[in-house]
Length: 367
Image (cartoon, rainbow, N blue to C red; front, side):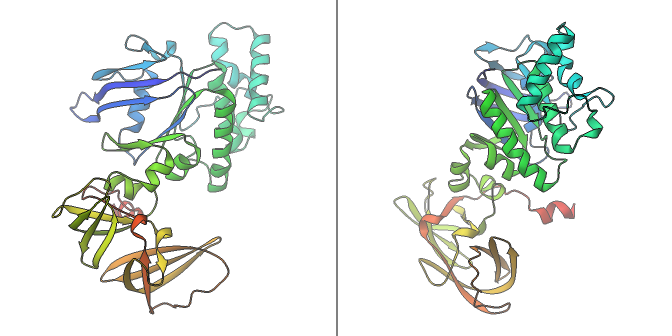
């Protein structure tokens, strides 16, 4: 198997009711890449997937796979395969027949189908499960059957729509490694849709962060996490402490932002000028206990133990500030209610233009 590149050229998608699910988008996914589209529900990521697979036609622009315009090609003749969220396995059909189903539709003989199914079951570590029914398998095993079935038709591009969402945490973590390994061994281009940042960061060569039909940023996981370009990307990918304010001074690649909690110096990648409304973002693991370059004093509210990490939550003037520390076995001196000094280095903070933020879990639960 060999992957092909996928190009979205000036693509937008508007439904008949007038709702634009995908704003004008230009995107190139390289052949053999594990590419994730990450965003909240309703942001347009599944719509892009359905357009690539041929189930939706772009309102403008074109989709090109392996240098070939897909405009006149339906889903059944595109070099793609789609794995649905519910997997859609046939419950009364043995595993090997599920895997070989697409081959039967193409007129491949039963003997060849069985041999190909066994080859793929070997690939996904289900060598001895071919004669079982899907209901006799675990959730992770059924997931691998769905992957084998999709690979049976030898797609150049495999499209995965939140395939791990129904699995428990431990199994999801295991399947991330499985999927990444299968992708590397086959060389097929994977386009993976998810709202789970952990999945995207763990598996992907590159990630596109999407919000309200717009790709806000795309790049490697390291780049998006460490150097977000928008307030939404900074607040959606990973946790971050946020300080709202206005640019006081700009000095080289850094700036000083004036906030209600004081003035802080941090990176200024957008070259914001004095007077600009801005937001400062600092990752919790970049916060330190004790005095440093950017200082503030806050009251400890609670301490959460998370195995290898200790998460401390402070409060100052109604703002919650999180500090994530590696659990070295040493107790934190301050107890709940005590005031502690916090600080962060200027190159560990990033100042971005004020803009829309990702909703928190608490906000979504309140709806």
